[in-house]
Image 1 (spheres, one colour):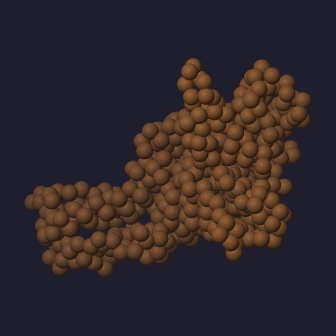
Image 2 (cartoon, helix red, strand yellow; image 1 turned 135 degrees about the vertical axis):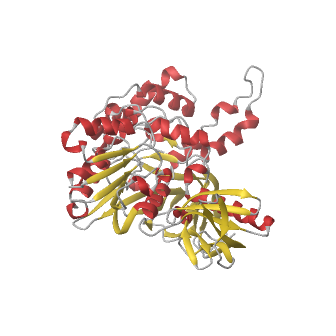
Image 3 (tube, one colour; image 1 turned 120 degrees about the vertical axis):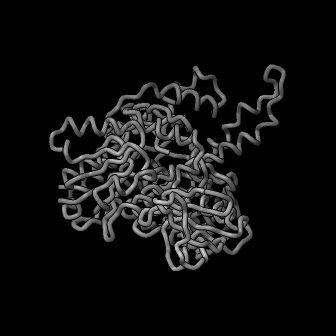
Length: 533
């Protein structure tokens, strides 16, 4: 299979162009010669439909339909309806299948599992979940600075806020001087955007809410293309939820040439880590299945499977920077230029020089988002040494760690493959350079994380982060007790007392965190910022 960033040519057919005669109410030949029609993709670009000498972006194809087995009708944004006749019925069938697949890959909601899509929109339609994101002070204040401090990019301009949520970025855009903002929100939260805009006189006439996915919006609904796109399309490890693909779709269809994007780039950062306690926790979560007499049943045959399930989960929590055993490598993704297709498969090769003798337990990851405006450059960082956000950081564990000496190199590859659940499956291969000693994590499900910040008494909290949340917990003790009892093989009633003896400072530090509503597809237990997968 060709790499997603390579040049490619798809199946081609010979088609004769037709036009629809409104007087005769039938399709008639245009008189033009039959031409080769194919799918084509230049390196690092989106797939395009090539009709003879004409190239059409997938974003310009509104619909396809088959009038008969040898007659295809395309609805194009600029040309309207175009008829194409083919003598090779089998060839046309294969071509239409490929066109439909490429278009579905581009217009993402058509390809996703519908229960995932429904759960996604239901989650973001709840004010409690919007509140969790708004109360992430790093996130909200950074976006505010990025927008209001780049007045030249907003003053008197036409803007679009993709995935508007509560509308906060739309409102910031108006505060920065935008003449009009299209607040695109597919969930019922669009009603709240309108409610808040109408309740604030300076916003009322500046905000137009479009309450459906951006992929379904037509150019006729807008007052021309927009000068600037704003969005918060970011999930854990940058790409989870695959919202960035919709951001790129909006760029292709609605952003003026030379227009601005906020954010305009993101950087994935990965580094090896050593954390024996975390690895021990995960390895010992199979304790229940070691029971050899559960109502007369031996459960131990499931021990190995249970262990593999836990190691398949990414760990989402805050990382103590002292756990990192090498400098991070960074991979930049330029949202102004990357294609939707390039995000279907992502490969990040690495070569780390290890700074100390240790067991390498896996890869740690985080991201930075860049707002490179005309007046200011603002960076939103989720690095371990920065104040905590509701994205936390993430870790991918090796079931079998690597024993490495200081100065040795660990090389390998992190691979990400998009799936229909609006997320990615990841795999990691790591090897001590110059040896045959290696380890791997063949399948990690990015959509099924463990939010360890709230499930483990041993989780780390960056200085000042807990106090910034300003919320009260529901009852962290119940989660602490359950986890501690599971890993220590003691009775649940004894767990919290034992924990307090060994880790009382953690209890005090987390006393200001609040439990967030559970997200339907992951149901994690989290801190006061709430889950963001």
